[in-house]
Length: 305
Image 1: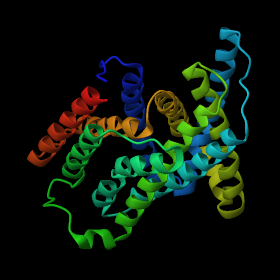
Image 2 (image 1 turned 180 degrees about the vertical axis):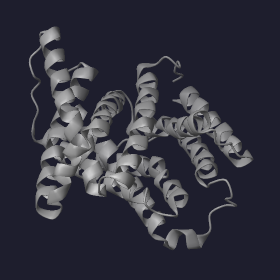
Image 3 (image 1 turned 120 degrees about the vertical axis):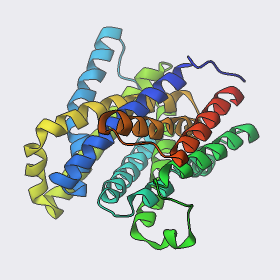
């Protein structure tokens, strides 16, 4: 069926991509200047959790609704999503420290195709032929955009470096987390998509905070204090993480995770725009071509779903 550009899942996905662009910029700064990869990852969950819990309480109170019932499948999907997202985020933060960052991010962006496969594996959800064609077209645009100004294309040798490995790993892990979160929202006994997303988000981020707290306490004890010391910047990571995660979870509650991830690649266009506007960086011909192909794939996706 055809969709309107004002369809709720489209609007919240674009909002999520915008929040994520800002958050990754902040995390890059912290990872390179202040915190380890684990510390930068923990800061995202630690500083967003209070805001998420307050938002859930406010939503329940203002809506005068009870906390929905959840069962074993909710916690199973939630835990799988929580763990894989932690691992994926660590991979991305480690990517920030690699000289082959562009190559790694290129492979990370193949998570859209991986989400199609994981969605079919975990939830039995597929995509239409035209939907898959739109996703494939988007991958072409992403490869053009992610290659860097001097890129001439990807070589087989690119797949053997550490950055490529981190990029591929993060893509697979993000695919599992996205599909798991969609599965968790299905397991919440409520019709309200926003409520289902909030409950899932609160449970997942609580688990992630506890997991990372235990990990850092025994493996990187100094990082807990460093995260607190970086609170002036990390607080904003928490706020942008809350906004982005809530929008992602609402989108997953409304639409197939593969389609959400495909539309979410608008994040790369936003990143290029931010670099141009704030850092006065020039856009190469390859990047213009990549953005054009990506926009075409997004429009095609909206029209064919």
